[in-house]
Image (cartoon, rainbow, N blue to C red):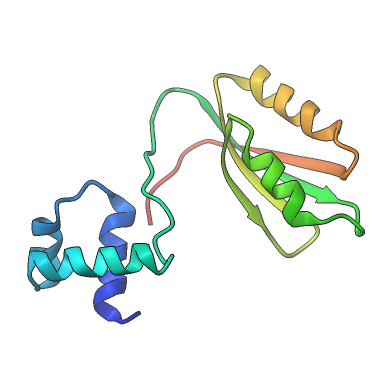
Length: 137
């Protein structure tokens, strides 16, 4: 991956629906080059998916999860990723092992998700932070 790929990715991160012609103009290349590079990055797995971010008035939260030392963290992460309210699952270093970014209809739904997570045998504890505002970087 070179500098042009990184510049294309940065524009797509802000808005995955940006037309290739606009990206090409911004980075100083042709639309065909942008299309070919996006296709290559997609087939190589650099781009995993195109997604939508919404402003629905829902409550977003970051739920930090600790698991037992003998637990397969990847397996737990995969199971949690299937939950409807979960937008992202990150395996992280530090005191907690997994971080969820969740999008729930209200704080009661966030609490219910946390309670559901705590019922899993592999999960030792949780810490939750409500997301008050977000900006694209």
